[in-house]
Image 1 (cartoon, rainbow over the protein chains, first blue to last red):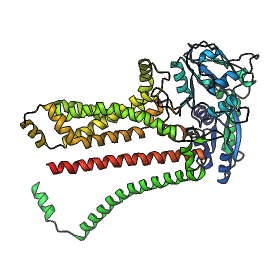
Image 2: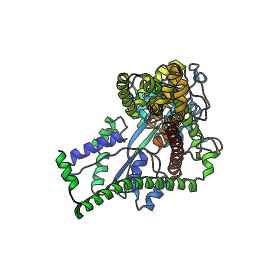
Image 3: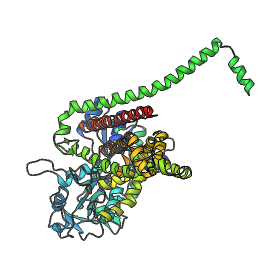
Image 4: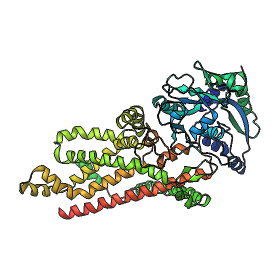
Length: 259
Length: 309
């Protein structure tokens, strides 16, 4: 999300040359920490704040206010040599909970499935665990299997799957849309439902993600300390303006409204 | 020139010059103390955060089960798969690089002519200075596919691949410490063995290496310490799956890679955050002990060789 933030800052400073914006990356935790200790005015993060983070902020006299600023589609990818094109939600759950271990079980090649994922503190990891793995019958949260490899970013995950013919991975759709060395899989909510792909002809399927017919998407957030005023308000307004949302689209994320 | 020195030494000590001398002395002392102070502060900070982990999570949690799921609802903080992952990368790396590093060290100290050594040494020094991220990148981009085909590995990124990457940085460490240890062996031992008419190789094998063996082993231990503390290469090449395995061709997750990978996005003040400081402190203590052992061994060898001289 740091690249999107950088482009927002550039666009904002073109409109408001009198205001200077500095952007620092480092992950959601870094953003929240800097909002809480007052070194930044706005924290852009790809997940909602957790209850203990909100508590921690309030203890330090910071009142984090959430702003929804963009949408991100989460795509599932495999190697182009894999003959699987479509996966249903329940199969995806079986694969990523470690129940299905061989591609043969879902009519693929006879080879072990190699799971790729993200670091356990990343927003994408959290999102995928909640929306795909969710809970078992007794209400216990299901975890990814211990042999899932964790990569440091969606770009390196795409790179790994492009070189591993038995690999499967997930991440923000923007990282995958233009690549031909990986295959974006269509997703079915149930066995009867239509399979929907988040990428059609190397272009992001904006409508399907926005209207929810493609089921894996999440919001991206900006957090401010209290109701934004002055410069912070101008900045949030800019992000939500048509121009700000155009930047969202140009960075391969999904604008909140159709342009 | 000489005259100038004369006049300098002849100059009488004035009050001012003693003052300057004192000031310089304290300035240097202060500089030394600052580094000690920083070290103490780092230790204090780490131990404080690690202690929060113990009071928040409990020390049993780190050794009780065998799973590392710090962000799960049912969070599990076992350090055991991480220790196993660290050993699975560091031990093979130490074995590979000890073998190559000791041979290289013997060659440089005993066999190579002065000229060859002059050529080879700078290259080894450059090797030692290679940024680990560059090695990690090379291993990831080129080495991973090559080794996957070579070993027919199911997982492309695995412990053995990381070990190969690590051995690249360990070889210079071990070879130069081996060379130092061998050179510290007094020359009269070599001369005495030649006088007895044995060949050069027999001399190296039976006289020089036994005399320097503790120095060589200190080099290996120091190399091992470096291997368990190395981050970038294992982060990029090991695949980072906290699996409980002894298979070198599986992905593993080391202590260092866990800290580097998770600290950026962890929720500050959460048990997960403190647990990362705990495993960091654990690693610090282990590497401290390892370095201490190798220092003690080197010190002992120096004393022994001094007696021989």
